[in-house]
Length: 481
Image (cartoon, rainbow, N blue to C red; front, side, top):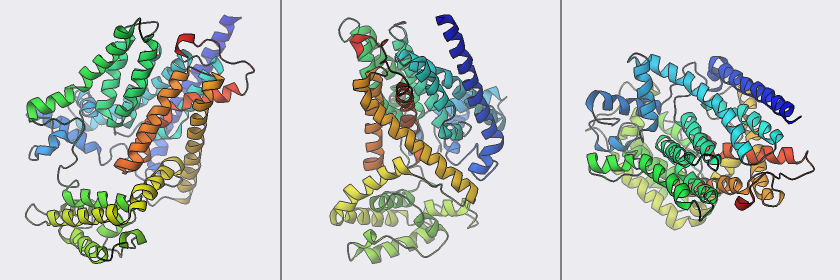
């Protein structure tokens, strides 16, 4: 009877994996051009930062997005850049061919991740039904489908994160999996830096699996050592070869990321959640309609107007955005800008917000960020009515799954639908990363939250399955509950 049940589960899992693959193929072939508004959606603006960095390493021996800018050596961590480099060679040293192959390879990796999610759920003590629901939720999750073919670091870093968790969830069976988990965790962080906020939760997980005393050295320490060795290659390289200890990245690389634009972003996020419509109004020379919070100090009004005018006439970063939007014939040259003055003015305006508008800066704006992170309903840009309606539906679905996942993780401490250690790990990642993004970093893009959201799918599935089961899960090892 048990064998029949296993065969039945396997048949359902194969159908779910096939369904997930079909959705991903349909999106890359048909849906992507409608969602992103262009048939060339696979390669987007940030892609070139990784391309330039790895090509400079291959051709000139230095990993840098611009050999003439010292900070460009730290523009992007190398995880995704190296992946692009591998496919550059697989494509016969033709970058266009390599990138197309990489986009399809990401689809295959994400399809494999569906099976890994199922195995993680099983290893976490969920019922077979809950494990199948977990796989189904991942296979059909709209936002991993949307970002899988795009040549950004989201998709590959999600795969590396899931790989780390997959090996760690089965580390009690194979002790070497602590090593594999640490390696993949390090690669995940080098691919997308926000994965670093998951490391405390993974370490807590490894600590519990290590039985806290008996296998402490072979478990937690093995995980941390391997993670440290892999991730540590980045700051070690920066210190040894660039004479600067950088643990994350440095966006101050000129062109689009010049001081004028970076200072503008710091200012706009001190008063509101989005940089639109002000950004578009600046580059298109439209009248700006600032929120009232921009004028809390009497002297800010004139300084802000003066600074915006300089952004339009002598801001390097803004000139590059205008150029690539087809609004001007060429960006500003090195000796034509007033970036330092724009940067100074925006710094004064940001300081004014911190000093004179504390409630908005420290409370209202971060809470507005959190509201957007959890309840965003609309898409950016000029979209058709149908695309906007579909986007609102998908964002509502995302919100529902996140809330259910959080509730399930909390309820699970009593219900025991799955290993509570997993819930603690997922919740700690959620709290750490959402807090940092909303209250500290403030540049809010929903794709930055993808990793957190996906980890909540297993608790969500376990709760859904638990409502249809009269008995609690009994196969969770007692010493790690």
